[in-house]
Length: 254
Image (cartoon, rainbow, N blue to C red):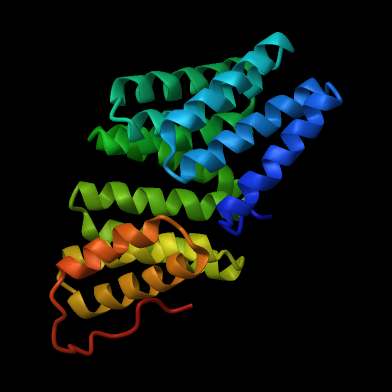
């Protein structure tokens, strides 16, 4: 719950306590799962080197206990920390290996999540067509299985990729879908992510007033959550000159 609410520092403290308890009780599988969760939380706080060290420890636990799905999940999640350290080739290799393991063991849910992470990496390195393919594949799975948090995430990532490809109408469409889902399920962090990509997409279309409205709403939510994305948005907002009101309508009908 703490992680879902983006209370990262509280979540980190909680996972460290659970980690010590699981080690003391020699609960090996729990230890691996907690190490993986702790690594994700640390990585989200942009402490990428520390996150990768935790992922390596989780991998050792999973290998020692014969849990390939755990190892695949570690590989998928760790890809973004490799990116954060400026190592795109390592990021792609990790994400592709994670997908290969999940595919080999026949895990539909695992394969969808691995495609999600690989799509993010491919989008960030400019392989946009491949990124859209992987995200479209996992979006279909998450919608069919009614995993709405994942649906929101993938729609936001598709919007990011379409922005990179300068396909702004497609980006707006997916960002609005993500925004609707995040509000329906009561997910503030997802709402802020959706508003961010919607604002960027609208800016690409030249809809400046609506764009700024979205970006300011996202900034307010990220700030309230204490999310590091608030700093990124402040830089973006400071770089944009505030226009005169243009009366270009609501952000999204929901």
